[in-house]
Image (cartoon, rainbow, N blue to C red; front, side, top):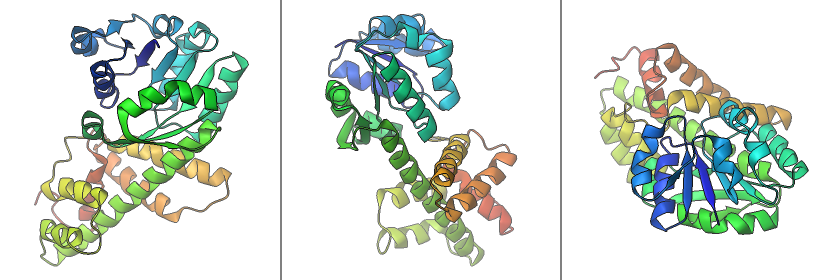
Amino acid sequence: MKIALAGLGNMGFPMAERLLAKPFPLTVTNRTKEKALPLLEKGALWAASPAEGAKEATVFATILSNDEALESLLYGAGVLEALPKGSVHLSLSTISVDLSKKLDAEHKKRGQGFVSAPVFGRPDAVIEGRLRVLCAGDPQSVISVMPILEALGAKVFRLGDSPSVANLVKLSGNFMIAAALEALGESFALVRSAGVDPALFLEILNDSLFRSPLYENYGKIMAEKRYDKAGFTMDLGLKDLHLILEAAESLRVPLPLASIARDSLLAGLARGRQPLDWSAIVLSHYERAGLDENR
């Protein structure tokens, strides 16, 4: 198996480290070579362009930030033409349902496999091997990439032959995270207005009704005001909510909570909070309640 990985951001870099540690033969490509230097020291090979990485790959993995970046890589950078017949494109990104359907058809037309395998988990979950992987695609392609997915995550969920189903499930999960952040933000603003420390409120939640990794981890970030250490930025959160609402509209499914969370993220982005963790949604609720966000 010859693996090439495109995208060495917050998620892609630790994914590459895990694959090298297994070890898998790995070629990496990125907009800047400097980001790849620690991986090259650990045995990775460097491809000067995505197409160069694709032409020898049996599996070409992508972990990019949005639809536009992935389409630019595949079409603009020549990856689709360079990827050999019989090779598999493994998309680990959170992308739209429509793009997933488009790529599935495109790869089939070219005799290439396509597996969509978005993940649940932040960068620390990649490092610790705690990712949950959602996987869908034609059975033979899925079998060929399964060793990679098992190396990256603690559990792989098989979701059938249609890659777009994995993307819909991933977006549905991200919607639930956004709804939880919205609820935490509103409740933190409420208890703060009554003079209760949000950290104490969070302790009560975690010790009673709402103990879960989501409330525990994101609530702690909110209570400790550690928004600058972004595992998932506010602008990426807004991107996902747009994709969620787009998919829901196509299926004629109302998602009022998603619209509310989107507006709270928009309010934060209007204040210049693009690079902050999306748990900084709580600051929008503090402002609406007339509370000092720095206290």
